[in-house]
Length: 207
View 1: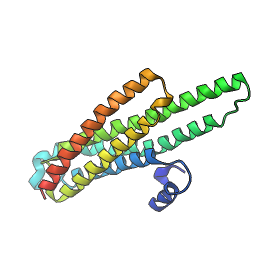
View 2 (view 1 turned 90 degrees about the horizontal axis):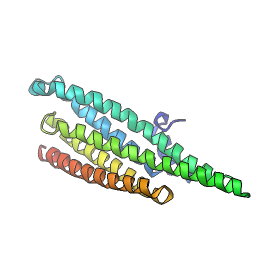
View 3 (view 1 turned 30 degrees about the vertical axis):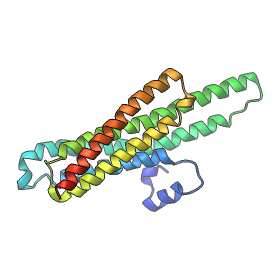
View 4 (view 1 turned 120 degrees about the vertical axis):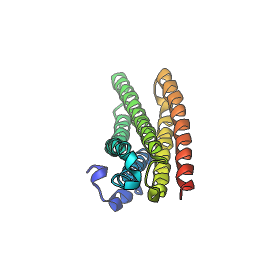
């Protein structure tokens, strides 16, 4: 069963079990999905209010973008668990002959790259959703300001958490690719932290 189709309790029971997946990568993606859902909610609570009529078009656009990002981040939760399972399966391949060792090494390398790409994509999605949240600062229902603040916290947690899953895999992939992941990841992390801090301070300050 896909993680997004589970009840919250069932998912948390699985997460807290001795099963290695889902783990931190999936949890990071779901943090991002929660953040996107909250961004969408804040925009929906703004549309239709006379006081915020001038921001209606902006909020309608944010609703569409946030809904798509929410769906993508939900999908990332399952992709992350699947990526881990690929790595685990690769390590279980036979290694009794030179041919088997070579095939096993190639499988591990391929699976590790996928396990790096998936959380890296989660980072991208979280930082993109933070930009949507940023658009709502000062242009959305003040009664939902705390929800926008919580959205920012969820999204930065998703981004930074996903980056930790990128970093843990860099030793197992090509050095050149690893450096690109590291450099781009550091840049996205810094951007996500700055945007989240701005959104949170602006939102809390409006309460």
